[in-house]
Length: 475
Image (cartoon, rainbow, N blue to C red; front, side, top):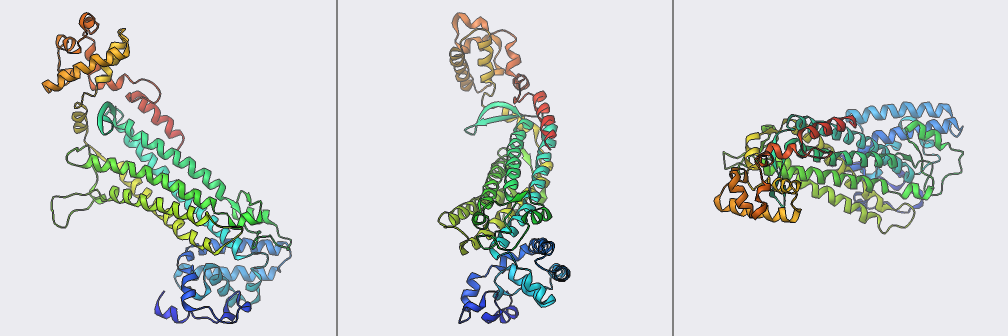
């Protein structure tokens, strides 16, 4: 708030919507402490949208006149134009977005503006506004999530046969394809999209008509308002309608999971971009340099996304803590629901938008990936499986290959570097050494290893391409 606005924010109680009950004005510090207009004014457009639907219903039910409805519609059109142009004067003393708009409407159209609040309370009004706003935010996030998923599919398709090491415990485990690795993240984000849409269904219920907590004695038509605003139905219980914030908590939970998946991907991008690993590079526009070290190219976008995940997780905890001790119905505590909700939505949307642009432009260093896959005896399990297929029990095969790995480690070579006789001797199989034949070389190559995973969910290039084709149908 500017100093100029602050001078205009000291209103007498008679200017307040609830003034008649009180004998002295609200203290200036209390005004600042209790006001929410500094952050809830971003709901102005949905507040106008909800008010227009409410007014249309009131007129249809003969609760207000058609002339009043026309005046309200014209006044709201002017208010919307003032807000969009930045000319609207927000007043701290009017507490929130709702009273600011109502006060301006009354200033413009007189008594018709005063009649708008018939049959509703700020309690059901704010609950409606939050749901309208969040529904729009969810749709934006879902759209960017879809773009990110498409980008992952595109890169995965190009690299369905690009070999890299798969890791467990951050140790080389088995060869996989880079496309297969990226599709693991696509699966995570698909679950996020599913959860987001489930959340939207629970967001999309109309609280308006619950009034303060008990409903209203006016002959309102809640179903009409729900239809006008695109809600799937109405909240069934008036107490729950005004006090429920489960939908906001659920959204914050979904946001935390989205950011957790983003953070895991970010961690890998950061590791892969390190010169010590060198699997990928990111375009310059997603990176920054150092103020002192001229050679540096820092993956700031993934690092910040990793950091912002903690902030979004904190918003979820704040929302859960906010609600845990509240009795029915509405309490002023609920004013604190908006900032964490807004912050989570903003952070997730911005992050997904950037990642949807960045991921398709990941520069893959296939040779570095392949070279890394040749380290750490990545085909050891393939050799064990080979012996099992020849009739050796798996535990015996496991031990035999462990002997071979021990020999290779001492010689500083790979299993594939041993000739047939050396491999038989290294496996320490005695009379069963003849189980190892010339065809063993097929399973010891990286290409042979990944090609052998020919089943649903496997890393064989054909299976990766099939999985991508199936995945794209869901988009």
